[in-house]
Amino acid sequence: MKTRIGIIGGTNGMGKWFAGLLRKESCTVYVCGRKTKLQINDLARLCDVIVVAVPISSTANIIRQVGPLLTKEKLLMDLTSFKKEPVKLMLANSRSEVVGCHPLFGPKLKDASGQNVILCPARGKRWLKWLKTIFKKNRMAVWEETPEKHDKMMAVIQALNHFNTITLGMALARTNITPVEINKFSTPIFRTKLDIIRKVFTESPELYLDIIRGNPQTEKMLDIYEKALKDIRSKIKTDSRVKSRKAIKKAAERLYGSKNQ
Image (cartoon, rainbow, N blue to C red; front, top):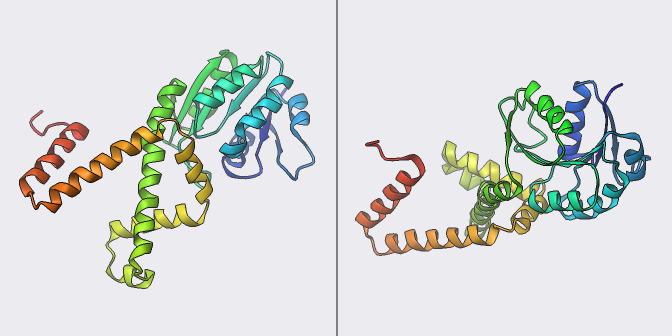
């Protein structure tokens, strides 16, 4: 019998992407959303695996709804950008096996070969093996981590990164320079940055704001960002070239190691 997967939020975004991947692997996939005939109760009854792929703001509520409907032989998993809170909720509200999952790429990527997928195993091993096999068969790099480690890293990779992008975009808007003028003078690297800003500002700004707001480590990362900004600004302001170079060299050594190593 084919594995039956139910994806709550499978009509858009990563849920839709995951549905396509699973169908490619000959799984029977059911999806539900706000406008679909099938709903959460139907998926819980029909499926072996339930995937929560709704917006971050709705995740907790959906887990509380679907978790109690699942038996211990089934799998409950999520695709959200955070892991600590969703995994905790899945464990508390179900008897099923539980795995937190975060593909580290967007749903529009045509080929996910070589892309990272983080798995946070929480209860049971049977479905974990199945899930790893699906991703590895499609040549993705699968890593197992704790929810705590995942969220700490996402505070850098996502929250700090997106905050930096939004800050740059807001600053550019305040210059009152038109896009036409910016493009006339832009370099290839700057055009790449402008493309990222456009994506964040126009496609789904609420998603990026939820990622920044929702990570418990965000405040710590933004404090570090603010201190770094003040530090380099003070060195530039005083025209201390030696101190500025030393600061950048020290940061480079921390990030990339010494050239003498």
